[in-house]
Image: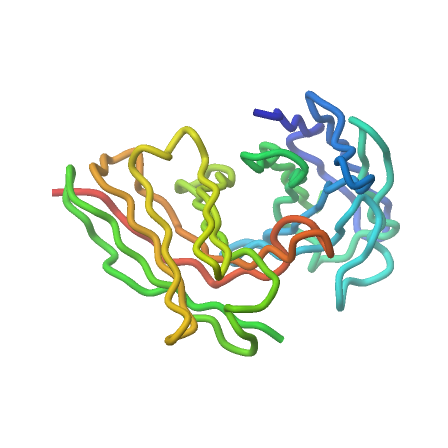
Amino acid sequence: DIVMTQTPLSSPVTLGQPASISCRSSQSLVSGDGNTYLSWHQQRPGQPPRLLIYKISNRFSGVPDRFSGSGAGTDFTLKISRVEAEDVGVYYCTQATQLPYTFGQGTKLEIK
Amino acid sequence: QVQLQESGPGLVKPSGTLSLTCAVSGGSISSTNWWTWVRQPPGKGLEWIGEIYHSGSTNYNPSLESRVTISVDKSDNQFSLKLNSVTAADTAVYYCARSSGSYTGGVDYWGQGTLVTVSS
């Protein structure tokens, strides 16, 4: 199985300041079709997860442009340009390049 | 926009079978998507259980494969999960979800989730 490792596991951030979460995979996530199936999901407290970013850097429908994704191969980053109160929650990276699909441990974003 | 809703018993006895159904609305289960189950033990992270295509083709997590069956009911636009020989370790919130194949890769829409507790 591909292991997804996120850092940090907890990130206290000041409102209005940027935040960054890293995700590293144990193998390259480049698929045979040339795509890299790395996504980011946000889970607010008491809510189901929600897709934010797919294929490294594409924002899903309705996702604010303060969220951005980058990376390649085995190293990926989710950035929030200016953290807002509604961004509090746990963020998961996930890969859908190789079965079984796997998730990172999650990074808890909280306000200082 | 597609919506997914899980239903099923919230309490299952140890060694019994967990059975959940996911109703899909706002889209056809016969579309070019995979229909997925993911679970989350209380206070923990997400675990992919498996997926099914409308043709009946399935993929399962090897860690659960011996106990899991996912099936599809095209006439009712829903799909189901069965997990047998459950233990307390199977207590979790179970989410059904849609995976859109090569468009987004992986899950793009999630259900609200349903808590299943394994206890006597």
